[in-house]
Image 1 (tube, helix red, strand yellow):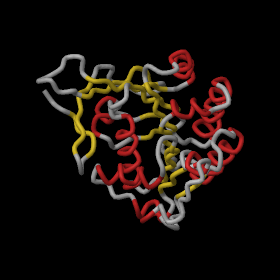
Image 2 (image 1 turned 135 degrees about the vertical axis):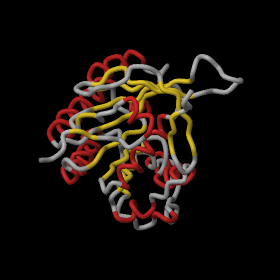
Image 3 (image 1 turned 180 degrees about the horizontal axis):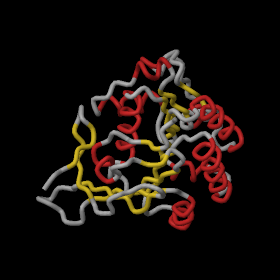
Image 4 (image 1 turned 45 degrees about the vertical axis):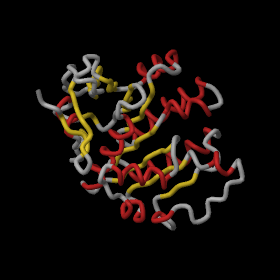
Length: 254
């Protein structure tokens, strides 16, 4: 029987979610800029790929080439996964360059000709965007994860907040519940708070990232917690972590 739960393989997440999450979950990762939301998604992707799973990363804030650099800065080489299509970058950023007549020919470097590059001509067209997501989800059904970075940026280009909220509810119903693929998205605190509150209610789980309010030796220390997680045992307390190149997110033990 197919496992009903999804385990991340990321040390701080495994500590606060000892049983993982239900595969049919839509999860939001919320926090200020710089608290490690994108880094967390990068490691989730890397660990999943190492387990032989498929990963779809929907990029709203950078190109596939720049995302590859971020993986490399963590010591994670995912180039071959993109070449084979096990890691799929759904590019919802490059349209900004095309609109300014910036030619991208040959700009992909090691990703040139990779099967895992999907260019979205205009992500502001939510119907076309959804068609591509649903196509990828149908191929992945029950054996992968979808990561969105960031939903805040998507909100700045969506026709209106209500249409984006409806899209996320459809994604929850079709991708997570029907195809049994967990979806994890990031969202920035301090922006579009009215929308954020509604989005949190529509999600199955909420993970918070923050800087420790008790500054230690003038350093900004990162922490995470699970505020809510439907159907999964979790620790509600704040866990301190650091980013270690080559290892990823590591728990800082007192």
